[in-house]
Amino acid sequence: MNIPKDLLYTKDHEWVRIEGDLAVVGITDFAQGELGDIVFVQLPEKGSRIAQGQSLGSIEAVKAVADVYSPLSGEVAEVNAALNDKPELMNQEPYGGGWVVKIRTANLAAEKAALLNAAAYADLTTA
Amino acid sequence: MATKRSVRALQSETPLIFELSRPGRTGCEIPAHSSLAKPVSLPDGLARRQAPRLPEVAENQVMRHYTNLSVRNHHIDRDFYPLGSCTMKYNPRVNEDMAALPGFSALHPLQPAITCQGALQVEHELSKALAEITGLEAVTLQPAAGAQGELTALLMFRAYHIKHGGRPRRRVIIPDSAHGTNPASIVIAGYEVLELASGADGLMDVSALKNALNEDVAALMITNPNTVGLFESRISEITRMVHDVGGLVYMDGANLNALLGIARPGDMGFDACHINLHKTFSTPHGGGGPGSGPVAVTKALAPFLPSPVIHEAGGAYSWDWDRPDSIGHVHAFFGNFGVHVRALTYILSMGADGLRAMSEAAIINANYLRVKLGKAYEVAYDAPCMHEVVLSGDRQKAKGARTADIAKRLLDYGFHPPTVYFPLIVHEALMIEPTESEPKETLDEFIETLLEIDREAAANPKLLQDAPHTTPVRRLDEAAAARALNIRYFKDR
Image (cartoon, rainbow over all chains, first blue to last red; front, side, top):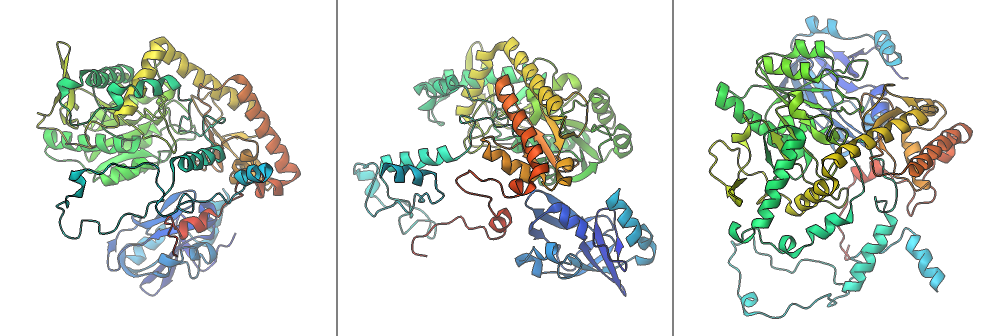
């Protein structure tokens, strides 16, 4: 299982890369593997405000539909429009071209504590 | 030549009906009539300027085309169809005989009620029967499917809270084993979804529910028996807890097939439930239909039912449109009437004792499969189940064949696969609902086949990964079909 050491994770299988006050968000390799072939992604509007744990959008795979939950509060600074035409990027490059949104964080220092490091996330997926 | 033709019938390249089309060929001739020559007064931009591009074929071509397709399809008249949560029971032909009676089939929905009292009596008798079966007070027959029934009930809950509490409340609770239609209906009805994790026993976690309940909660939606095939044994306590905060409780009636004549949603404290006539009451289902999802409610909710409702006085039937608190119409006219005729036929031909025996047989069949298949497959919740059993394909996955591969391999043996990958809380789920329709011999063949497939998974997982091998088309690329959906045919492209 690919769980990069430099990322933070949620128990709902999202990953976060902190870049200053921006947080890049995607779903983990484990999540894409469990979902199977992703065929459609519903992305949030750029500029919309979201709270930690709130749904950012949804992912439709051949066998199920799942929500993507926001790991942090803030404003949607950028969405990965490439997923509209190529949702399979989430399967192929979950930590690269398959990223979902960038969030301009509002309360990073306080909320970061709720996220998991790679080791804790690895425990979760093997439990 | 004969050989060539019969081989062709089983190959994948069956021509589309559009490819059979030849300009000017028709199946019937409509006589000229003066009224057809007049221009129709439609607003600009709405009137069609060209004839639709329909296939031009003769009647026998149409008949052969669809008959051949039906042979290549899997359906309940061909073989066993244990699709979990879908109740693919046999559709008795007497239902069709009744629905075809000209007094029913040749009705016009706008004809005066006085000229079709028999049809209205069907609506009345069916409503009464469904109220008695569910232990609830009043019924609408309008919704065309279970999901529409859910939405109808949630809109009634909303209207109820506005009328009695001045505000609609915010949130509807569901367990994480809920059918996907539940959260969709909640959002469309304007509520927030709160999903609660099920307990380790597969049942609703009552303490988690207790913590989630407050005066923002409009309702709890729950399926009983639930989607892992278990009866929610604390259901009376659950409905009481929701009522204590002023909330309402909805039963998703998808699994009602386990309960007829044994237990009633109304007695469990439910305020509303839908009834899938196309599941429990043997009307056509799956590529056929149309569906029908009547909703039964308590007396307190009856004023909010969609209008019109059927009214009976001294043996005379009429439609009652004068319902100021009604949420309005949810279906054109009175719902899918032909389906109502079939469902009432089923209820009357079974009788009360027959319906109870039906549910008992459905439960016994599912438990027979649970015990026999439990030798090779992991049973998700190893306790006596109701009308369906959920297995996990985890052991077979470890051998190299996933649940999807098992499902495809079943096609080679002539069985429709069970529901797979649902409920989401069970890994590699196989959800099997045999229904009461099947004799023991069919169940035994199905069991032996799944045990054989388990042996194949150990000996040669590739055989499963490449399945199906004997169907008209092999494994389809479902992801490509969903990503690049193309359902239009144009000859000139």
